[in-house]
Length: 118
Image 1 (tube, helix red, strand yellow):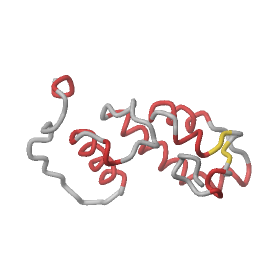
Image 2 (cartoon, helix red, strand yellow):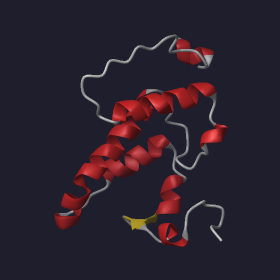
Image 3 (cartoon, rainbow, N blue to C red):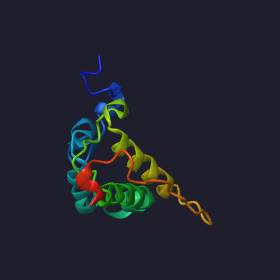
Image 4 (tube, rainbow, N blue to C red):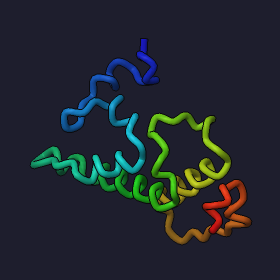
């Protein structure tokens, strides 16, 4: 019933700038960042979406910065490598916006591909 998208009918009928939600989640993180950075909203729509758009852009930018730009937004968490999952957990923590928190990373490169350790 979901057509392989893992999205309910209502979600499959959401459009953002003439692009469906299923089309957006099939984008790579890099392409999704470009999509949202170039998205132009006006008036009340811009006001409503301002905080959400900032959060989306910040999180996507962080994922690009930690080298996960090639992943698709639709990628299931179970299929991620240990290093990919670790970077996503770190992105989630940083995106939470906690104040006065210090992270101590013990062997932060464990589980990463050798090229990512250089």
